[in-house]
Length: 84
Image (cartoon, rainbow, N blue to C red):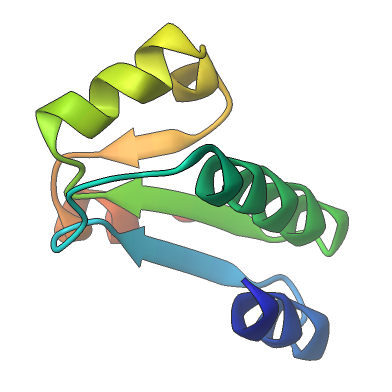
């Protein structure tokens, strides 16, 4: 989270794509960090996209209604194409 935060601080209008391809578990602390990253990015005029989320992890996003906060895409290509 700190490294991503630093990247956001150094960028103008940061465009971030986070792949969950190798992620099998997502802690509440990690969810909190994603919210922080999203807010920090938006404050700098940036955008955050998430992709390749395991269906069980995606269910956590749905239950917590974070699927409404984040833009989640099935593929990295779709996520990249969604940047404006």
